[in-house]
Length: 124
Image (tube, rainbow, N blue to C red; front, side, top):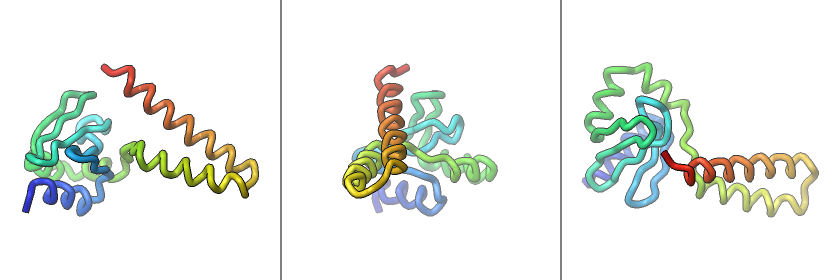
C-alpha cells in the first residue's frame, strides 16, 4: 500500500479535515491549527505558519500521546478553495430562482474566498 493511501486513510479514520490535491494533502497543523501540507508520496509534512514538520508516523505518535490535540483537530476545518468555488457556482445557479437571503449567503462565500486568496498572496 502506498504512503498516499495510508495517509488519506489516517485523516479519514481520525476524522481530521483534509483535502487532497496531488501531490499534496492539506490538513490542520497539530501545533497551530493553520493549514499544513503533506507530500503524499513519502508522507512528510510541514506547516508554513509555525514551521512544524514531520512524517505521518510522527503525526500519529503526537496525536496518540495528546488526545486533546486530536479532538481540537477534529473541529478545525481546512479551507478548500476548489470546494468553495463549486459551492459558489451552485449558489449562482440557485440565485436565479431564490430570494435575497441567498444573495447574502453568496456575498459571504465570495468574500471568504477573496480573503483566503488575499492572505495566500501576501505570504510570510
